[in-house]
Image (cartoon, rainbow, N blue to C red; front, side):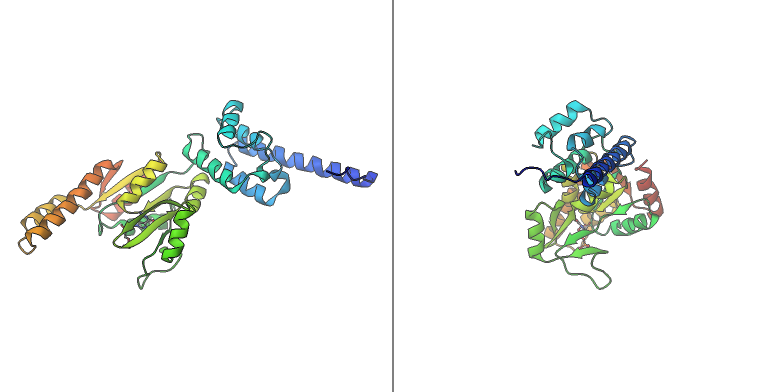
Amino acid sequence: MGAPPILTPEQRAAALAKAAQSRKRRAEVKIKIKRGEFSIDTVLEIAANEEAVAKMRVRELLEALTGVGKVRASSLMERLKISPTRRIGGLGRHQIKELRNEFMKSSHAITPGKLLVLSGPGGVGKSTVASRLRASGDFWVSVSATTRSPRTNEHDGVDYFFITDEEFSRMVRSDEFLEWAEFAGNRYGTPSGPVEEALLAGRNVLLEIEIDGAKQVKAHLPQSVLVFLEPPTWEELVSRLEGRGTDSPDRRAERLQLAQDELAAASFFDVVIVNDQVERVVEQLIGLTS
Ligand code: 5GP
């Protein structure tokens, strides 16, 4: 490193004023973190655009968070291999992701939203419920990525992100999905970034996904609430399948097996709601967030 530049008195005064301004800004941000007005995610976002905040030490950011003292901050930094003097601006992409995950999973997350996962057998009316919830404004509804082709009434970025098989594989490799699964010959996945952001911003999030994906979400985020939507006439369905004369015995056994698998999955879920009336289901789901 060369010798520091020699500053004129005016330059020196300007540099000191700038440093004071930056310190003031960092102090303001810390107060907002302490009051719970800024989540860790918000601060990381601000730091990406503001030099003064990028210069805040990671340790200071963590210690300002509710429920995180010096001890937890330093053990966390050690675990995530963040050096004790590291500034926010010096964090690597991977470290940022891990920090976000940490606070999403932890009970110390600031006013986090609830994550509801809606699953159930095909044709039970999940997507109608999801669109009602989106319209209610009480939930941010995740948009999945899929390799299946759009249906005539579907729009890219609204119903799904319709992507190629290659793009899906790339997203799997770079760990961009919270969960993903194969269903009827196509792949479906929930992009994790927007879900994390919404939760950290305190929004309630709804995922409308199939059963395997729901199990993966629970494994990653135990605080998520898995909701199984059941058809109102489940027993009838089973007895109908059993008594059906038109299906071959093999076909009947196959359908019964599927029904049984789906019933078994229901016991894995936190809540089972019978879809007898959409309005009632929507009310119950909103009730689960309070
Ligand atoms: P469809 O092709 O009829 O829109 O959806 C087929 C199935 O995929 C539905 O059960 C739907 O809930 C599920 N699905 C939609 N998006 C996702 C996702 O991101 N992950 C998983 N695991 N399933 C999804």
